[in-house]
Image (cartoon, helix red, strand yellow):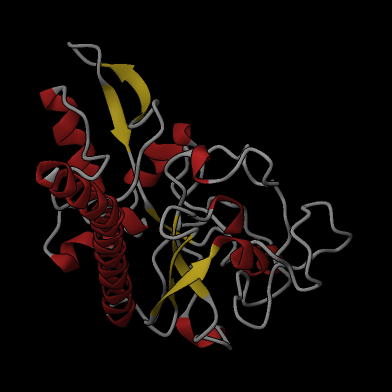
Length: 273
């Protein structure tokens, strides 16, 4: 009888402790991810201070455009890491290709490109170009990416095409630095959202993103680095709700700039694709 009582107490304690351990682990991942994003914010400010107050170039979004992105000095994944004692991504991807190994992904190591709490989709890391001797392509994988909406109005007003690595947004052009999104945690896996969510089907094989690919892995939300340097946690449903209170991408003239989150500082943030 005493043994049964002891076993019963142990079972109850395990039932109490296991969820607590899981919560501590999740909180640790979230804290580390927030710290990584703070580093990105710090590095962006440092780069801007040395480059006429300009933000680094966000790059072209498609995977096939990575060779173009990585060839540019102003590309964010090349420009910021050296200021944080990290290798530019052009070197990371080339070294991995020569060794015929994967680039860091899935919480591996101390890469500031990777969220330790992310669970990558099965296709990650994402390859492009021809394969090497062991069948491994050049690759990329990011959990933290620039706001893809930041310079939409800037380029439209100037008549410049999307490929404009020398037409960079400047800090002085941004009115609401405390609310303007600079970098976001991007979803690592579509399953971070329920299948019924309006943004569930969006491809996460990207190197820049807006609200449509915003993370939901840290307590149903993710972290955002703002232009003024602070980093905050935002619930996914809040980040994906527009100025008229709708999450529907087909909202007539829907503007995803809100009082709390500004995606395009110079014009309306529209759901384009």
